[in-house]
Amino acid sequence: MANNYKLQIPVYTYEFMPVEKPLNTLFEKKEDIEKRIAELKQHKQDIMQKYIDQIANGELVPRMGKKQYRCKTLYNCGGVTIFKIENIKDEAYDWNFGVESHKIGPNCHVIIDNRKDMQHIAIERKPKAFSSPNIVKNILCETLRPLLRQEGLLIDINPQFYPKDFWDFID
Image 1: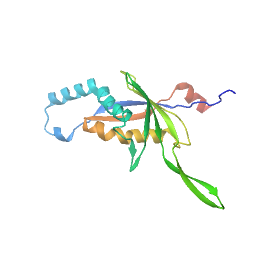
Image 2: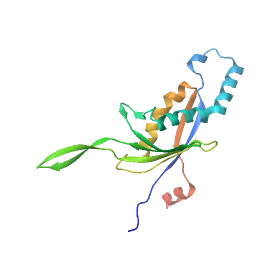
Image 3: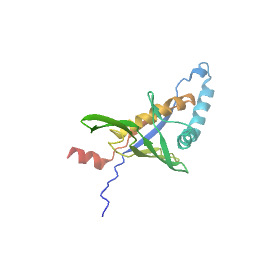
Image 4: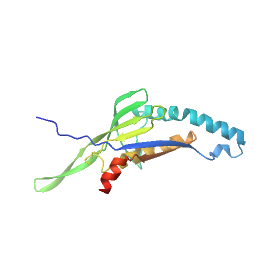
């Protein structure tokens, strides 16, 4: 029997920007600011990899608001990390002329390519787990932004669009 499962994975690109005025640098000299920004640019992916590794090792649990999301790492080497992120929720079903519920844990794949000059995140589109890949992107943003900010970095994650996709949408 042929496998008709089509994996749909939108790709996002992330970029780093230095925090303009970190709180502890209120009276910093211009040359010190330039030096700090140059160091951040040089080490931005190392800083990001530190937090990706913490997710991969289970030391950092992704969260959005008060909800936490479990992850299972499938691969983590050379700046490429592949993991599954689980969305534990209640599923209702009819039983004995009433409604019962039980916990389910649908999940989707996330691939983070943090190699030099790559900075891509691919998130599997799997509606049973998350209504949209953007939800997973928002979970990653909410988890990583405060950590990167205290390192002096801001992160912005945006969908990557391809000209063919644009014209297919227009047609």
